[in-house]
Length: 215
Ligand SMILES: C[S@@+](CC[C@H](N)C(=O)[O-])C[C@H]1O[C@@H](n2cnc3c(N)ncnc32)[C@H](O)[C@@H]1O
Image (cartoon, rainbow, N blue to C red; front, side, top):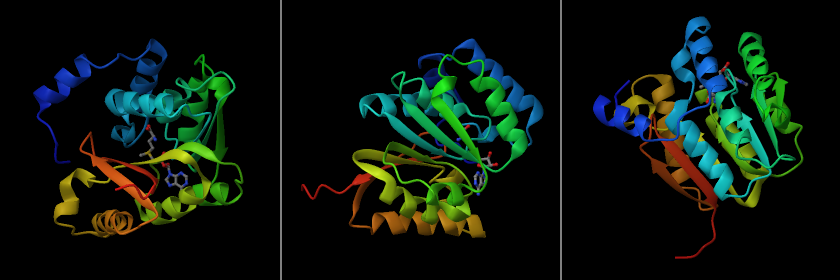
């Protein structure tokens, strides 16, 4: 993966960004020991960004599409009030098992509900509004998740989409996933229902909100 910043800057940012509690450091360690693609975990820097987004939007309800071992769900849950809720979607039972083990160790775990099964099926059954929706599951379904998210996001809510720079491969797309992500970015850029910004943090994080038509 193309690194968007130098290793030294990444380390400096990590060192000067709020550190993680021990139970999340243990979760990262177990993810690296027992999962095939541990780098999928969003990690300290992006995790803190998600926490800030939930905090600043005064969110009460969050939808997390792509649980993996539960790191993003945990970071977002930690910024919710005690009666807040994160619904997190995952297909892989091993990932879900690890996630649940660490939800039980977390003081915020009671706010998180994991729903096992293809995320699109789960989302179709939801009728409530969400203040933050984080899209981070299979890249081939990004457009479907985004269209569904636009129907579920509250008026002042934010949709957050991970991996939109795809290791820099959006600049010169070659394989199917490169094209999917590149096409997805163009789709959002041409969608006048929304306003959006791409942050070159980690693998690229896009923030989307409903258009306010203020110019
Ligand atoms: C990039 S990881 C998510 C990382 C997580 N958000 C975090 O911050 O640590 C993507 C996850 O989506 C799951 N996934 C893939 N396809 C899915 C689908 N159709 N429905 C639900 N989950 C899916 C994968 O099993 C994987 O655990």
